[in-house]
Amino acid sequence: MSLHISGISPLSQIQTDVAAPTTGDGGTSFKDVLNSAIGEVENSRSSASKSVEKFLSGDGEDLHSTILATQRAELEFQMFVQVRNKVVSAYQEIMKMPM
Amino acid sequence: MSLLSALSISASGMSAQRQRTELLVENLANSDTTRTPEGGPYRRKDAVFVSDPSAAQFSSLFESEMNSGSGVRVSEVITDKRDPEKRYLPGHPDADKDGYVAYPRMNPAEDMVDLLGASRGYQANVSAVSAVKDMIQKSLDLFK
Amino acid sequence: MFQGIALNSEHYMSLLSARQKLVASNIANADTPGYHTQDINFRAEFESALAGETSTEPTVMEPEGLVAKPDGNNVNIDREARLLAENSMRFSIASNFARAELNSVKTAIQESK
Image (cartoon, rainbow over the protein chains, first blue to last red):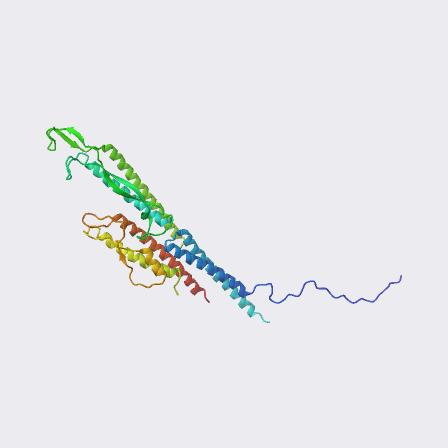
C-alpha cells in the first residue's frame, strides 16, 4: 500500500470572533460607582430635609412619614459610607499590584 | 389632620365634659334651693356643645392647615326657663301669700344619669389621649 | 456646618421654649385679677425664622377668642394645660430630628480614614 503524503498545509489563521476589548468602554469605573451612590444619598437627604421642614411648619406632613424619611436618608448615608470604604480599599488593592 | 392635632382635639373633649360635669354637679347640689341671689328658686343649667376647629390648631392665630379636624367647646350655658315647681308648705320662710314655696323644676335622677354620661365621655377622651400619646412615643422609637 | 434639618429644628425648639415660658406664666397667673393670657404667633415666627430673619425675641401677643372672667382674668386653664403637653411633645420630636442629623455628621467624621 502506498500512502499519499501531501505537504502540510500551513495552519490557517485562527479566526478570533471575539473582538479585542476596547479599554474602559462599557464598564463602570470606580468614579462612576461613587458618583451614582452620592447622587442617591443627596436625593434622600434633601427629601428628608423638605419633609422635616413641612412637618415643623405645620403643613400637613405626617409625623411617621417624616421620621421614616430621615431614617431612610440616614441608612442610605451609612450604606454609601460602606460602599465608599469598599471601593477605596479595592482601588488600593489594585494600586498595590505590581505591573 | 396630624397625630398631634388629634391630641388637642381629645383635650378639648375632656375640657367640654369637665365643664358639663361642673354644671351637673351644681344642679344636683341645688336641687332644693328655694332662694337665690337673682331671686326665686334655683334654675337648672345645661351646657351646649358646639364643634370648634380652632381646638386642633397649634398656632394661636389662624393656620391654613387643611382638614385640621374639629374639637369641641361649650358655646353657651342655658338656664331652664320653665316655671318653678310649687309645693304647699305654709310654714316655710320663702312661702308666698298662698303658702306655696317655689322649688327648682328638676329631676335629680336625670342629672345623675347625665353625670355618668359625662364621666364616661371624659374617660373616653382620656383613653384617646393615652392612645395617641402612645402612638407618638412609638413613632419616636423609630429614631433609636 | 449645621444647616437644613438641625438648624430648622433648633429654631423650632427655641420658639417652643419661648412659648412654654409664657404658658408657665399664664398658669401661674390663672387667678390673678386683670391678667391677660400671653402667647406668640408660632407659625408666623417660625416662618420668619426659616426665611432667615434673625430677630432676637418673638413678639408677645394676646390670643383671640378667650373669655374674660368677671375679675378681668382671661386665662383658660384647659388651653394652657393642652399647650404645656403639646409644646413638650413637639420639643422632643424636634430634638430627635436634630439628634439624628448630628449622628449623621458623627458617622461621617468617624468613618473617614
